Image (cartoon, rainbow, N blue to C red; front, top):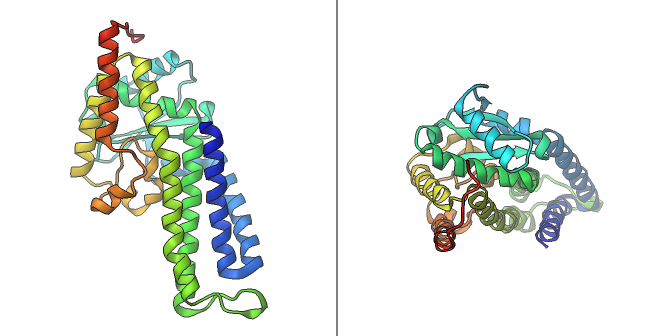
Length: 293
């Protein structure tokens, strides 16, 4: 059901992209937008990991380091190929995963995260990202980021057309004016709502699987509390410049006040911690053992 729901939402996002193209240039604009959407999806499918890692200036983690060892150990426990491990130089504590499938996946943490959390909390973060890799959320969320960014690009063109009337539709009619301005205002909001619908349920599921993998829900809960507090205090300049990638992170990396929280691609951190706390209480009550060795 979750896969079907995601497919429908992805189709809706592509449809939105095509609709914006039609609003700007009629049938020809719609066809061009459809072609651009197809090329964007193909590029994201084959090169999403490289594009996102390059965007954040990520570099490979030391091969014999503790981080790579921890990722490999948890990947084995999750019955996954060990992903490539990267570190990006950012004081904001955060992490994300990317790649089209488990065999072509990459996991990236910030230097701020490594300097903030304990080994147990880091294990919780890694387990969360491995869940995204296992269920190919990395591909889905990268495709969403690519399409959402393309919608925003077209929306900017629509705003330009609305202000200056420079885009021509069918039969030479102008695509500028109030209609183009309306498209420019509503299209990014609609794309953001689709991002939210896709991302939020997947974050809860990744939290649940990470807790089950480690048998220690409170490790991830503690990590989320520390990461959220750190992310609120320290901005991520690259994420601020490229907000379409914000939903890739384990915690929202953007700073834009209450309106940003209202339209956040992430569920409430407090709710995520509350769910994990309930899981931890349930495990204690049942005296469940941990698969972590």
